[in-house]
Amino acid sequence: MRFPLFLAIAGLIILAGISLFVGVTNVSIQTLITGGFDGRAMQVLMVSRVPRTLALILAGASMAISGLLMQMMIRNRFVEPGTVGTSESAALGLLLITIFFPASPVFVKMLVGAMAALMGTALFLRILRAVPLRDVLMVPLVGIMLSGVIAAITTFIAYRYNMMATVLGWGAGDFSGVLRGRYELLYIGFAFAILAFVAADRFTVAGMGRDFTVNLGLNYRRVVIFGLVIVSLISSTVLVSVGMIPFLGLVVPNLVSMMMGDNMRRAVPWVALLGAGFVLVCDIFGRIVRFPYEIPIGTVVGVVGSALFLYLLLRKNRRVS
Image (cartoon, rainbow, N blue to C red):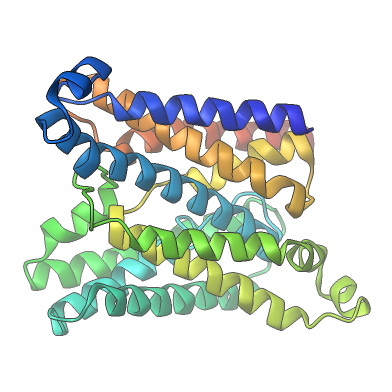
């Protein structure tokens, strides 16, 4: 297993290298050498390209791990923060703090977004307890409906306060504005993703159900709340920094699960690498398909992710039939 993991890390490094040299400004080995440290190419590399590539890796790995964690907590393979109302709730909280306390520091806005995300996720779990679920696909459908309601409320408030452009920007998911000094919050989200890896065994046990967890001496409720807090904080940091990245936390954990099973400690490194690589590939594609213009990564990931989501749904239906 170590050799395939080494190959995956090598592949991620190659993709990161390609990402550094793709863009409107001509940045290459030659321009870096001839321009020197004070040259334009070096400045673009250090101020824009390196932060953008780091942001892609941090956001991709964090969101993929948060999707895996949410699937373990809810015990359903068809959910992620963007399909159960977590990301939409974070956007609503972020919108309210931006409207009523516009001078608040970004860190405070992130915390308010995380609190709203946690409340939205708690509301989703409350609805799940009240609705009879006869099919595993009912869970994501309930989540998508709740996400739609929260998104509609957010849109209404944004329309009343003339904030539609801001909300649409959060929903698009775009790394083109990432510069040095404007992405560092993603390190906080990645730190919580590492925390999820440290507590992976507890989450794996919690994913087997309340009775199994209690029999092993663990506090099921405490473990679930801890996991959802991690998911909410990761979602809010990514939303504040680059906007929503749809379907990432859904398709990547499912692809890894099909290869490696449900042991979270074994799956987390692969989910992180595949999530970061997936985002890098989509971003590079978005930058070259209409060069010199860019397609937002939220659009590219949305198209690819929705196709993979349909594949997973149809595959599940064939297995059930």
